[in-house]
Image 1 (cartoon, rainbow, N blue to C red):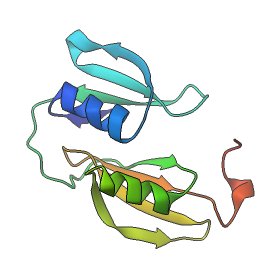
Image 2 (image 1 turned 30 degrees about the vertical axis):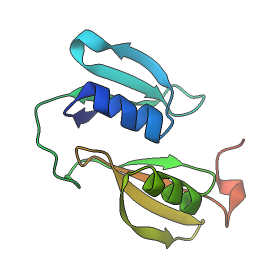
Image 3 (image 1 turned 180 degrees about the vertical axis):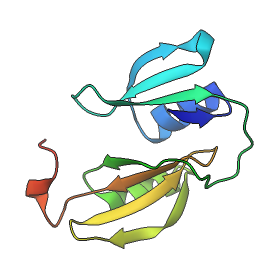
Length: 120
């Protein structure tokens, strides 16, 4: 579960900027869960009092994308806080982005080794 300071702003980031789909919402508790694919695991956010200070020392969540460099460019154009340039890795490319509260999400692709990526 990632801590966020404002639920509406967080939803704009996670749903609008990242394009995640809502799996469930418990709005009275300030919690929203997002789908991360067809499996059961997901990503949850919860409103908590904390100041914005990207990047924060929190667990990193990594998401597989079709093209990490293209995703970084689109997110940057949309105003997201990209933490450095996309870096080449063994399987393809990776980049990190911070939400408005400094939670870091990694985006990685498997363009060099597509067989290791998720189907579809």
